[in-house]
Amino acid sequence: MKIAENLTAIQSRVAEVARAAGRNPAEVKLLAVSKTFPAESVAEAYAVGQRCFGENRVQELEAKAPILPREIEWHQIGHLQANKVRGALKFASWIHAVDSLSLLQRIERLANEMNAHPKLLLEVNISGEGSKFGLRPEEVAPLLEWLPEDAPAPIVGLMTMAPFDVPETTLHEVFGGLRALRDRLQQETGHPLPELSMGMSGDFEVAIQEGATIVRVGSAIFGHREYT
Ligand SMILES: *Cc1c(COP(=O)(O)O)cnc(C)c1O
Image (cartoon, protein in one colour):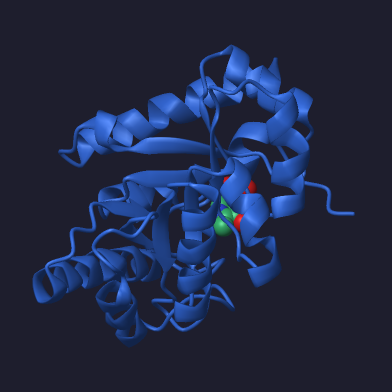
């Protein structure tokens, strides 16, 4: 039961870091990123109480979601191709990496058609590295301004990936930068953006210190990933 053990350890660490930062641990959602791991691994984490899981590829989401408990809250976290939007909308209640106006428009159109209401996060590339995807900070406001009041899928916050192997000060700049951008956009557009999806196995502690409300943790829970 290595997964159960890892999960318990990460849950305590998340709560501990939140408390030390003067935050309420209940404000930080732990998303277990199960990409590349089989449905059995998800079931193992589910059995010890984990309910929120993240997948990077829609094909994997489509393979696992139908054979696992319906109570699971699925998050589509990776770059989403236009031709995969339907699959994501079928199973995901959150989509983390909306990174263009055309993708946003397609999601809204198909969500309306499919009567789906996922929560959306806009992916921002804060540092100019870290991810080859993501909006530049100045590209975010136009998406918020385009979104109709009665859109089926609301934008509820921002998401980012930090570059790998950078000093902790850089992580603070990236995650603090996403929070500052969120604060500014809320003021300038009046659009509420309560959610900040940031932090992974190697950097979730800094992300929580900087205000993350969702941390996306994979390998620290499920172990080393083998890509085929
Ligand atoms: C894989 C992945 C994660 C989790 O990464 P770990 O380092 O294994 O915790 C988080 N977010 C995204 C977008 C990912 O693709």
